[in-house]
Length: 502
Image 1 (cartoon, helix red, strand yellow):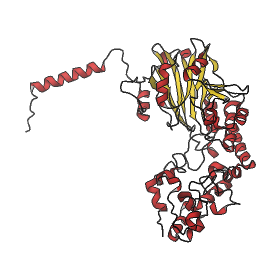
Image 2 (tube, helix red, strand yellow):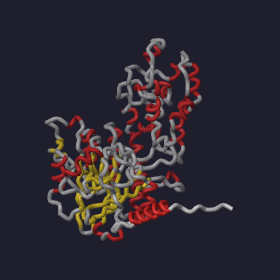
Image 3 (tube, helix red, strand yellow):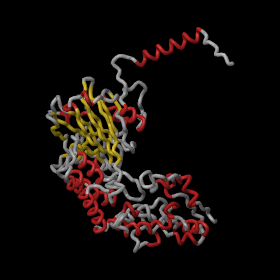
Image 4 (spheres, helix red, strand yellow):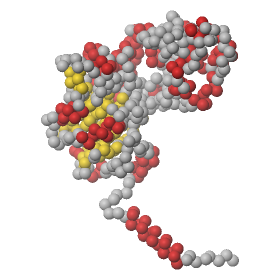
């Protein structure tokens, strides 16, 4: 029979002391246990440690909405840098985002006090970006669920002034730190609305100007952040909600927030490095800062609370996924018609051809087409020929012909064409299938660059990778997290692996 040895007296005393200490820590007076919902949210969306965060910086605690009067709560729907993503491209299933889904979500909920778009609606200054700006402003400012405020980003200002002003007239654009002498300037120092008897004052700081506006004789002038914020808050009720949109990095936000008086109740920081929105606010000098992400793929529902100890915010993320049962993925039908009109207008205006061959090639040579490469690189050409890259243009044609997938002129839309051809927008590159069929599909030169000098020198003028980047970086120009969410470079390279031949 096995005998159980008694514990030594010292061990018993140590165990008893440990239990007493643990109970004392668990029972600190005035310290509430986290709710089940908060625990679940923390498990699903662990809070990242932002860059530059110092040890000992304030930690956000979830407020209890049941004890906060309704007047001291404000419900906002936030989205950050759109970057011209009016809708998912459709290259892969399960893509998120799009204005049609967003406006359907807003219409179904109808409980948001403030709709706020961060800024940088576009990503460049091409004719297509102008068309995207017009379409985005039409949907966000002039349809059934108009936004209350939209920030102005540096990329927005890169568009031609006259056209930008014409497309944005009457929209609620806020630019507190931008001053302009032109009477048609659409940026307002602030936007204000009443919510349950309390004013909501919204300011926006752009913080930087594109190169064309940095001269002393510029029509647009940048104020200091403090001057811009003071301008926005001048005349505001002491009791008003103070919301600040900030175009800049998280580091800049942390530096700036402690200097603002009166302190904002919420800062919406449009830092483009935050691709996905944060699930919890960051507290700096008693002010919650949130990062709404890019491309409008996932929205932030923010409930702002006014508490005796200061403002607190709780966030819920809203991934804009398509419907699994509605053909076309669902979305607001009126918005979908506006988007369809946009796509057809792009074709009617011939933007594909107008935007072609506007940029220099990286190495100064010209594109020749994959058939020229075949002469010397026989096995490499054979490997390419059996790859999906060689059928990239064909996939666009099939998608355009299938109403269940597209049913609109995708072969005329520059954003889509660029990843399915060789050298689009560069000199000697793809223009249209009719004019440059030899450059349709993702051919050899899409990865290795223009080969005219290489071919004329008999291979003595060697080629590397297009733009001199790493292979994985090159692939991610098209196979990014949205367009190819399952893409892993190490797994995909063997599918197109090939040698030099000579």
